[in-house]
Structures are given as structure tokens and as C-alpha cells.
Length: 368
Image (cartoon, rainbow, N blue to C red; front, side):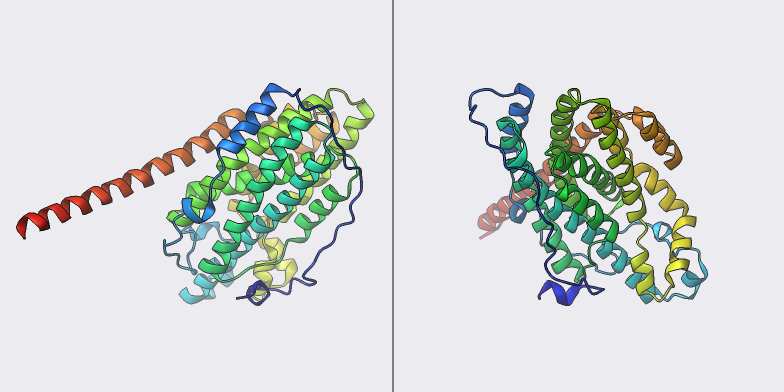
């Protein structure tokens, strides 16, 4: 079924065009490169995988409870609207929320694919071009997977959120070659990683857990790439140039924080926008969710050398300043370990089934 027929709201023009600016850069130095980046490039090649095969698409998904997360996480829980809802209504609400979340993941992954391709074009160093080429493939795979999950398992999509689209546009329109790194690798990818992780660790449904775990294994490399490239480059910038990047980060963080309310879903259930925003602001779960979402961004921003007073104050105002002390390397290592453990468990289960099948055939043959 065409995607346009599955949108819960009118997405508008089917083609969004962002005017490109900046230069395409070629490097004629083919032998030299940073060992850390080249090692990450090798890892990016080694870790390529096929979303059609690694993920068990035969797993059933209930579209009215696709994620199996507690109802307490829904913004309407405990309100007068919730009290009036039937079980069928609540199932529809769960479906819409899952569709909205995974649709934003899908749109973000397409944005990441375009940004990674832009980095290949604009970054001056060949080692960075090499790695970005592997990331472009990763992001294409992620978009493919989220799109398939939404089409086949939920049967509904939501248009790209205005704030996400705004940050994507700002990132792509900027002529400075480092901005796709900063906007995508640090802000959008960092926020997405935390959102993926929260759902991965709370869902009791095997298919979305597989998808999120395997995508996060890739994203751990992407954030590491952004950190390496920007940390090296930002050491060379003037204070004025660093302040410009910090202003971009501040604006982007406020946009991404405000992206997370899911007001569009409540409006689809007949709740006026002002009331929907009020419910979102009052939601204790959403407040906790917002804080956790910055667990990947704040330490990364600090690590790459953007830590001026105005940026620090913005994080204090958002209530996430302490996140700057988070151990980002440990979080990324855990993301990779969870995916590897999930693979091991799945393959061990499949091996047991094969052994049982062979043993059954042997027994049947002996009885015959």
C-alpha cells in the first residue's frame, strides 16, 4: 500500500527540497589518515548487516499494543479523557503513539542518510569520507527497517514533526562542513539513541526490541565518529567560531526537547492543541523521558569542546546539566553488548530447535 494512504495526518507535499550550499571537497592524499578513524571505518565495514535477514520479520505484532510499554507512559493516562476511553480507544491510542514515535525515527534516519552523504561530499579528509560512506549505508538500512515495521506491522505513519524538520533544514542549509556532524551526529542521533534505548529497555515485544538493539549497535559507531572528527577540528577554532556552534547547539536542543511531546497524536483524538500541550507539560513520565533523552547529547557536546557559559546555563535551565558527567563510552559499549547478546540468544535458540528437529527425525526413523 502506498505510504500516503497510511498517514494519520496530511503530510503535505510528497517532496521536501532543501537548497544545498557549501563546497564539494576532494582530497588527493590517499595514504595518510588518522588511525582511530580508519579503525572505525574498518569496523563499519565489518559490521554491515542485512535487515531482511538479521531481523525476524515473521514475529507477530499487535498493532494496538505494538510496544507493550506501560499505559502510565501515555500522556493521557490519568486524565478525564482517559477515564472515558474504552479498551478499544486505548488500543487506538497506543497504536497512534507507536506510529508517531517510529515515524519520527524513520524521518530522522532518512535525514541521517542525507547528512552522511553530505559529509562524504564536504568533509576535507579522506578518512572521514571513507567512514561516512559506511554510515550512509547504515542509515539507509535503518530507514528501510523502520519503514517496513510501520508499513507491515502497525499500518500507520505520521508526518515529520515540525521541530525535527526545522533542525534538519538548518543542518543541511549551513555551508560549513562540520554542521552536518554537529546537527546530525551529535544532536539528532544522540537524542534518537536515548529514545531508542528507553523503548528497547522497556518493551516486552521481541520484534521492536530486535530492531532497536541492532540499530543502536550501528549508532554507537556514528556518535563515536562525530566525536572524533569534531574534537580534532574544534581545537583549531577561535572563541567566536566556537560560540557560533554553541548557539546552534542551544537552539537545536530546545527544538528537540519540544519535539518530544507528541501533541499531534492528542489532536487526532479531538483534544485541542493548547490542552494537549498542557497535558504534555504535566506528564511526569514525559519529564523523566526528556531528561534521559539528553543523556547522550550533553556529555558528547562537552567532550568535543563546546562548553561555554551560555551553553552550560541552557543545560541548567533544561535540568540536564549533570548529564555532562555521564560516561558516554560505557553507554556505547553497553549498546553493542546488548545487540551481541541478543544475537547469541537468538542463534542459541535456533540451534536448539534444529537439534530437536534432527533428534526427532532420528527417533521417528528408529521407530519406523
